[in-house]
Each structure stands twice: as C-alpha cells, then as structure tokens.
Image: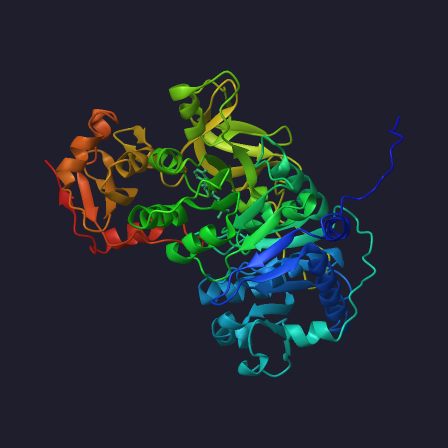
Length: 550
Ligand code: AMP
C-alpha cells in the first residue's frame, strides 16, 4: 500500500520562491571596503531571475554546469539560488586550489560558464586557456574588460547581463533527485573528487541546519557566514537561511581578524560559522582590542577539532557558546553537533560539548575495525567512522562527455552503501562521537595509538600557544613518535621542556612528546586546515629545527 500524500519534489525552485516572497524583507549584507551592500531576499529573488534569464540566453538550457569563482557575497547567493532553481548545476570552484587542481576540477565537471569576482580575475585568467569546456565568463564586482579571454570564450559584465533581463523567471518543477550543486573535496592526496548534491539532499540538509538541535537557524537570526561558499556549501547556511528567512552577513574578501571584528561590531550578527583557525585569529585580536561580541547567541565551529581551550575562551571571556560540529564535503556537510544532553551541567556538560557530538535521526553511523567488523558504541572501541543517510554521498562524480554515467563508487571511500569517512574515533552508548584522528594521521608508537588531535588540544590549552599541530615521525625504537609544531602567541616565550611539563597531567606518560619544533605558522590547506602532509614533507626534508628532549 502506498501513502496517499502528494508527491511534491523537494526542489530549490520552491526554496527560492518561498524565501524571496515570505521572507522578502530579510537581508543579505555584503561587506566592502566602503559601505556594505544591502539587498533584501525579495531583491535576491529578482536578481536570481535576471541571472537565470541571462544564463538561458547564453545557452544554459538543461543541467549544464555553471561554476562560481567567488568570495561569499550577494552575487554568490544569487548564483546559489538561480543556477539550481533553473535546472542547471552550480559548481563552486575553490579559489585557493593549486592551478593544476583548478584546471582538473573545471574540466572534470565540464563547466561551461564561470562567474568570477573582479578581484579574482587575475587568478582565473592564468588558468582560463586550459579550461576546455568554458564558453562564457561573467565578471561580478569588477571590470569585464580587464579580462583578456582566450579564443572561443566570451566575457560579460554581471551587472550589464542582469540589467538586460526581466525580473521574473518561470522556475521549473525539478525532479528532487536531480543534481543541484557540486563541490570537489579538498583531499591532500590524489585528484579532487566531485560530490554532487541533489535538490532533495540540499532541502533535507537545510531542514537539519535549522532544527533546534542542529544549528537552530531561524528567522530571528542574522548569520555571519565566514565558511566559504566554495567549501562544503558554506555549511549549508545560504540555503538554510533562505528556508527560514535568517538574514545573512557575507564577509566577501575581508576575512582577516580586524575586518571580522569590524563586521561583528557593525552588523551584530546573532550567529556565525567558521573553522577553528579563523576563530583563533579573532580571539587573539580581541585580546588586544577588546570588544563586546555577546550579540552572538552561538558560534558554530567545525572542519577540524575545536580545542576545548577555545570553547572556554569564547564562553568565559565573551559569553558566547561554541557549538562543535563535525562534517565533510561528502556529508553536505552537517554530520553531527555537540549539544550537552538534558540533565547535564558543569564539567559533565562540558565533556559532552568537547566531543564531535550526536548524529541526527537522518544520519546513521557505525564504527568499523581493521578486519571490517562493526564495533560497539561503548565509548572506548576505536574504529573508522562510516555514515549513511539522505544527504551523504553514495559515489563521486564521473566526467561523462556522453552524458550517461553519474557516479563512481571508490571502494576506498564507500563500503556496502556507507561512506567511509577516513575519520577514526569512538562513540558512547548515548551516541556521542569523539574523533581521535584521521586514519592517516594516527601516530603508531610501540604498537599503541596516540591521538594527534588530543595532543594538539592539550598543547593549545597553554596560554602562550597560538597553534599546535602534531605529526608522527619515524622512530627506530617505537616506529613512530609525535612531533609537535608550535606557533607561539606574539611576544610569548616558552620552552619545549616547559610545554612538555605542562602536558604532564593531561596525557599518558608514554605519549609525552620528546620532539618539538617552533614555527612561525602551521601550513594550511586550501580550506584552512592544518596541512600535515606539508609538515611531514618539511620534516623529511630537514627543514624543521627540532628540539629533542631527553
Ligand atoms: P572537508 O571535506 O574538507 O570539509 O573535510 C572533512 C574532514 O574534516 C573530516 O573528514 C574530518 O577529518 C575533518 N573534520 C571536520 N569537522 C571536524 C571536527 N569537528 N573535528 C575533527 N575533525 C573534523
């Protein structure tokens, strides 16, 4: 027997129609070097219609890929909505990819149009001749004439293109399982892999972002989206905001601690999301330049493990609760969030909040050991995390000039319909995940495992330390031992021996690192995470000055 309910697709054309009408007065604010640009959701809807009409006129009639090479701003929001809602596929290009990777992903996705920010034109121009399928480049916030295009590529001004078009569009009803957007993983090994989100997956994920025990985004919020729109869809914030009418604040290219502090002071957002390294910089800035940020009802931090010390600084110095979240490009990205369960308080509640958190009802999780067996949720058994659910990838995109193939199921990443996350950890009986490492970052010392994340968090709890990254380095006796790369806060001095003493009551004695190096900065990946591969290479090539404690 089938249900008797209407079979209505969960499609982004409905999301756009709804947000632009019911929440037409909500705003997207874009930071600039002069006055911020302000646009209502009603205007976003009209400009999205103009963009869709313009793209039609350029020959985008079906599910061709339209790429963006942009900062977080109102034009990027317009593209986020218009492209999928007209039935095409949005491809967010990561502006920080190495040139070869950028060429690879644009060709692999077969991008036909690229919308680029004026400030990023020089970066794109160098690679443009290698992008085989691109026919049109649209320059937003800049001078289209500044781009010298290769043969066969037409250059347009975003504003001129929109101005020539009507402000309404007959948004089609779209099969909810069709492709809406794609994003390539920023993996540090091998070619990037394309994750293709469907209308349905984005819709359901947006609902989770808005659920009270998700990120609790609502029409009462003004959300500062620092996480880039080119990385894991800005954690779903643009779509979620349109779903509930939360206003958005977009920092554009002003991502340094000073401008972020200014945005906070001027716009007073109630909510913000970014990776730990961004907050680390902001907290240091606020130490020297105190400012009230208690208008933030909550700050979501994820993408890498959040050091507990950072959560305490936010809470105790600024009165702002941090919500620790875990996810991946392949999980749309919201996988789990750490809200302390009912009935807990004090230290017990903190201990829950340090974890990567609980999975929502839509996401199933399991831990798998080296032999492929499933491990219990006993808070101790450590294995690789696998997940399954309606907004979790089931395959990677296959480049298909013939238009047939849709995905490839790489056994390294997929296992019986589950996504292998490559993250290693344990889960408590009440469902709280603690990640101890990436499988490739775990340090194997004398047959035992040392969690690099736990060591990093412990070192970063020292008041003189700005950042600390830990890698395993070869050791004759123990196979591997930890090496700690430390960045000190400006003007601070502390020795390796003092740091090791500081860890004395925090980690097991055999885990205490003897290898330390002080660096100016921990190398970061294109999405702002510690790049341990580069750290390993620097060590292998003898570039690090290591202090070895007896
Ligand atoms: P990406 O696809 O670039 O967003 O990277 C996803 C990876 O980031 C995950 O597989 C984790 O290794 C890491 N990650 C994301 N959130 C967290 C977190 N809260 N704690 C630890 N690692 C995280």
